[in-house]
Figure: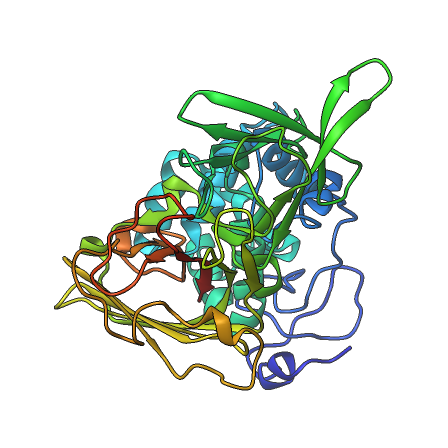
Amino acid sequence: MKTPYLLALLSLCACSTNNGSAPYSCVGSGPGCNPLVPQQPNNFINVAANSNSNLTSMWARNEAQVIAYIKNRLIGLNLEDTSEPSYLQVAQTALWLSTASEEDIDAELAANRDNVHRAMYVYNSRLNSCFDDNATVSASQCFINWKTNASYLFNNAVSALEMNAQILDIDNATFTSSNANDGAVLKFGINESGKIVSMTVVKNGTDETEFNRYNDTNEFRHITNIEDGTFDSVLTYDSVGKNMGLRYSDFGTYDINSDVVADIRNNIPFAGGYPEKQIEPNNIAQNLTFSGKAVGTVTSYKNGANNPEVIELENGRAYLTFNTTSQNAHITSTFDNWYTVVIDKGDTETINFESYHENAQGYDMHMLSPVGVFEDPIEASTTTVSYYGPDPANGVPTEAVGLVQFRDCGAGVACTGNYDTTPEIKLDMGFGVH
């Protein structure tokens, strides 16, 4: 099938294949070059990654998965050196090539030509012709020419490499709960192939409760009898970030249908990601404007501890801007059945509630304080925002997730935690933007 970029490049040069077939476009190598035409993809199926994608869109590859991917990409390449290469080194070099200059590539070719040869082949098998003895340009120039003239193929290859050729162990990622007592944290567990097989809820830093994943679903079971698989409760992990395509972070809600973990209720917002991909606010290099989604609950104890009313926030939209000069994040979240929540977070934090949807459910869920009026003493809101990007060193986030907690016990009234004597309304919200 002819594609626009190929048609536009037909005038670059015409070469013949080794078997004498019709001419085609190339980038300056000798006979046999054809790197502008999409190669036939190798038949590579990553079963573990496919299973993980049912849970989260986060890119997750362990060492075994990276090696398997690179091995597959190198099928068909025959070099004089037939010894087993370092597949992880090939993966690192392939990722490095995405931003390397022609001069840097020349230096690397001089140091380890076969490794660079393999790394280029991983991009596109037809780049093998860059190393032909009768090539008319250097291997480095050949690659740069292909990168420039076939940018569509190059960009697709880089995306595939970023997803499959860098080690991102998802069991290193942590996700914090917003409305669980004792600062509950979620952590995935994986098997040797990199498949997510368990979820652990950690409270107080050390109190762990493990749930085993059921098949390839988003359900995790608390097993009470290993021999017959008997379980007494289910944790359901509901990623919202998955539908947005977040790569290095995730957010959403989770439920546990029993009290196997104390003080955990339904529809609990969570947010988190890879620590190695996180960018601290003071390292962000440019202003940001992101949009995405928000989820959460509002719980009212106006009628006492035994009669809580809960609203699950509907159709949440989130918007975030970040200013590098002020180091301030401005977050706006709108819902179809509650206030618009407006937060400014920098050295200090402010929260306001605007535009209550009067026709939506829950008039009794109005804040105890007048809208936007919160006097001391009052429980301050707590907002956490984490920024993530492919290369934290360059300070450019591509996504952010966060949690918001707020308690209102009335203007000038301090929250005591005793819902019978001090009525309280609690907001627990998670959001993700990109």
